[in-house]
Length: 323
Image (cartoon, rainbow, N blue to C red):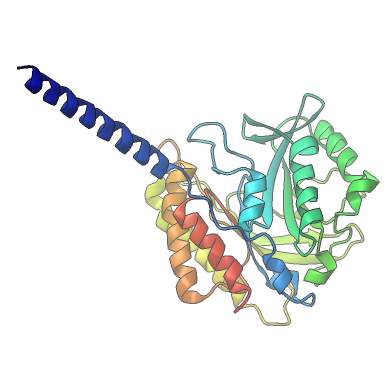
């Protein structure tokens, strides 16, 4: 009987090992696959390339990795996003602990603008001076005065301003902006703001947005920021809103200097989480771009770029600049 007992023990041990290995493999398979690095892709484009004619992959709520399924929009941090080729960022800030914390709604993301985010941007540009970053800044709650005071303090530091595009105008070229950050301010913090102030940003809508430099020069952008749905069963409506805006921008005459901003992100709680929408919207937009082409699509803010659909969408937007 002893040999039989030993055999059964061996079978049980092998079965346990198989289950453990399978579970571990499944867990690892569920994790985001590291995306290929695209650290210097803008360096292959000519200086004369108009910024408004670029296709720029971006992340919506770029710092939002915490807050649970209702609020998480990304599964990689900002330094990793830069390595993947992301060149547009949506940063939401609220005064906290004497600094500006990164928030999504009420969820603090455990990182700060002054010590984590802005230094990461500047460090990346120091190491990759051919690149340009477009950074949208928005106050995510808290007192407007506290937001303005803290943001102005960081933007007016002379050491930082060397890395900012000072004056926006619609005909900016890649050469004008290399090695710098072009800010889009949804809430103006200082009269000396670098970049562009945004006015006419309608909530949950598609509209024409005005971009204004501090010297008064103006441009316009086709903005699609339709984000509120009843559930992810309405993802087809979101996809249609995106493709309409992307198509309209690509159809602009060559001489046009109209910019474009499209959000691929959406929510429809409780079941329509950002991830639920991203799982449907990102692959659909990637398929559409693969058929229609990725050139002249403007800035596209995306959720969960480390997932397969997100990676494909980012790659198609980057590659569209070379066709």
